[in-house]
Amino acid sequence: MHQEVEIQRQYYASTASSYDEMHLEKDQEHFLALHLLASYINFYQIRSVLDVGAGTGRTFLWLKNRFPDLVVKGIEPVAALREQGYKKGIPPEDLIDGDAYHLPFPENSFDLVCEFAVLHHVREPEKMIREMSRVASKMVSISDCNFMGQGSLPLRFLKYTIFSLGFWSVANWIKTKGKGYTISEDDGLAYSYSVYQSLRTIQKSWKTLRMTSTKGESDTWFGSIVSTEQLLLIALNKKSSY
Image 1 (cartoon, rainbow, N blue to C red):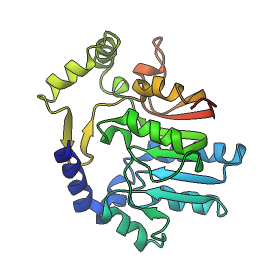
Image 2: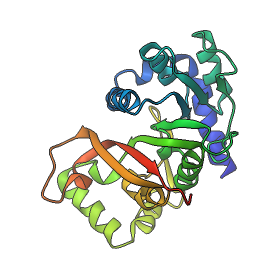
Image 3: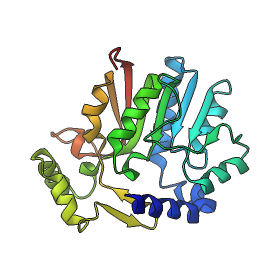
């Protein structure tokens, strides 16, 4: 696992100076999610936000521009990405080093804790989600992928069937030749992931879940699980027993 983390961090370190340019067009679904999230921030009177896996601070700057009085902090483990954020004027105390598995904040420290395209880059997304839920008091926002909504329609149905039968981990192990991950030039090291895989974990901490497609085709009669490539999930009403 240490090797995987190093591969990913080296990738981001080597692409840090061109990171924003590389992702400007590719991440349109996450910009849509950010605009949708802004309506929740306004409606629910969110006053503080933690962005987990903040990268170069794009979300930080967008939120501060939209909501000047909003308290925004970012956690980013890759120093080269943080340095790009500092060059944009983000104070070092607002974009800090940190581990998504062990967020350096007490419970309920922020009204909202969010992530954009980070969960499919970590081996243990459920562990990260539990930490996000621990630190959030009002809301958790997840903008990430759904592997069952990607590819041709027959392939999507095949992946859904394998997932429903409980054999996806085996199929993914075979697909990745035992590594469990893939490496690409435009996304670095990534794991097979679907937000739908995390619903049970999220429901343990939150009473209300709202999901919106941010990229994909119109729903089939199977629903959005085989049509949505990317989606935004908003979790509200934290359970008191958490």
